[in-house]
Length: 235
Image (cartoon, rainbow, N blue to C red; front, side, top):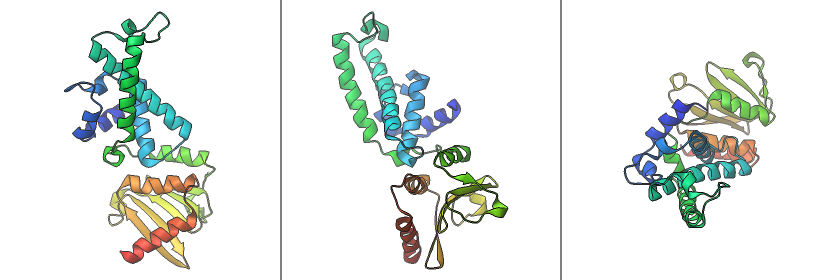
């Protein structure tokens, strides 16, 4: 995990979001979290925003890891004791501290569940290489741009961008913004009754939620095509 990327993400968050995760007023919790908890918080946030690689068991595992890290820090700060002094010889919390842990854990679990995730997305869009790995796990095949036939479940890269054929009539595009200043960085292209439409956006969560929902089978081809064509007509 790129620690610099995680650091940039954390310090780019709106202050009101970071304050909700402070264990004490004026305390930068990020400095106290260990690396596994930092990585879990970062990955959980991205999964909630973009849906990339979404998996119920993994999402729950990341949530537990992040919340446990926050709760541990809260106990250390609140009691002025190292974590090991609050545990027995087997590493389990003593009864007094277990009750405190449970209370703090429940509070942080609610905080993360109610987080304004779209406001927390600054600088954390998935890399093209990461998305390719996700596509390949979902059964998508790489093709060459010169031989692309728009076959379903194929993709190709071009000048740092990514073209994804969901179906013959529905495709998703990530293109560097200088190449398509009108559309922005992301676009969804759809064909209905022989007429093509495009929905462009520079808002990553809007794009990735549609893409990931389609890949996971939560949204059907016709549903997204109708949405794209309707937005174009209304626009």
